[in-house]
Amino acid sequence: MKIAEVRELSTKELIERIDAETASLNQKLINHSITPMDNPAQIKKLRRTIARMKTDLRQRELNNK
Image (tube, rainbow, N blue to C red; front, side, top):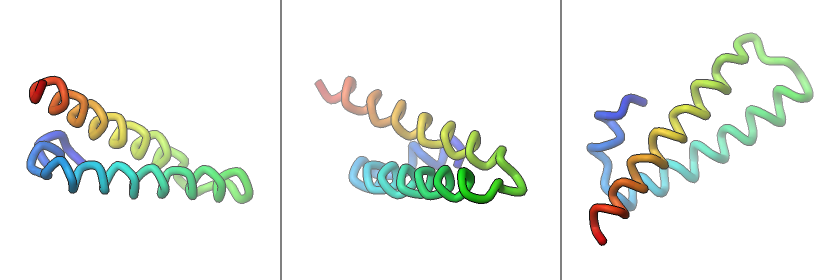
């Protein structure tokens, strides 16, 4: 997910998306520990996507204060 897509989401949608992506990341990590993934770069990509969303959420919090 690109930063432009993240910025289009409302704050509520963004929080829900962060929760969903975090759950997905945790599931992928568990699955990867049991059976190695074909493309482990997916984990890195997912971590960075979550970080982008959290960064945008924090910026929104700071701008509203």
